[in-house]
Length: 304
Image 1 (cartoon, rainbow, N blue to C red):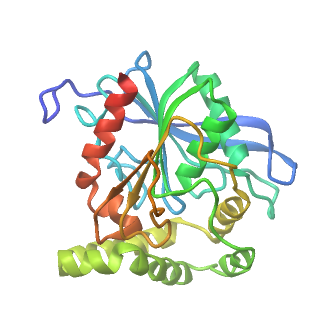
Image 2 (tube, helix red, strand yellow):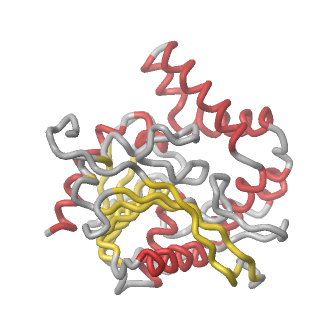
């Protein structure tokens, strides 16, 4: 069986979960963590890690997964694509506290830190027998974890591509109270739609027409039924606490020119690239093919 490019198709995306006993939450409380992840491509190939955004899932490559954003990276990741699973071993991780499988029981008010998330990924790598990750791609919140991983485990991480993110987190303590009140799908949909309309959805619907608008609103409704208030506030609490002193070495930054959540710095540093788009923070998801050449270039640099 071959892919559309003529390359041999990679094995199906394998979804699984591991347990990590004694995982320390941000306040030091230890819990038994369930860490959900996927892997695809040859296990003997060079390892790459792909990390999702704040409200996203780790089902970046699998269009068949039960998640409203399933396959969100499949335009540029998969057999014969820029992040080629015919030759690379690609792992994705659901970040602890999110709503797609990574969590714990018994502690209601606790949240994981970004450093704790990076440590959990290092433990996963140990259990999978992966000594070194050649490259990490982190989008939005996932960029926090990618840069933390590089900072804490510099000898185990080659390079980082941090997309629409920063090395200091967003949010304020008042957000936590507000997010805890989003205890129904209708409330979560209203919250998320408000954020998205200011982050690229409005421009996307105006540009793409009624059918695309209807599809995205249906996706938003599905997300509101999948995600939880607990996941929203726990991840936001982690973001509020996240702060690195500097961008770690061997990190390239990709920004969307119209992003209001993570505006491109002025002047842009040498390790930054800015993609011209009216679709703001959501551009990577709404028009992935304009990002693919930049990702491909970065991957070639890693390979070399």
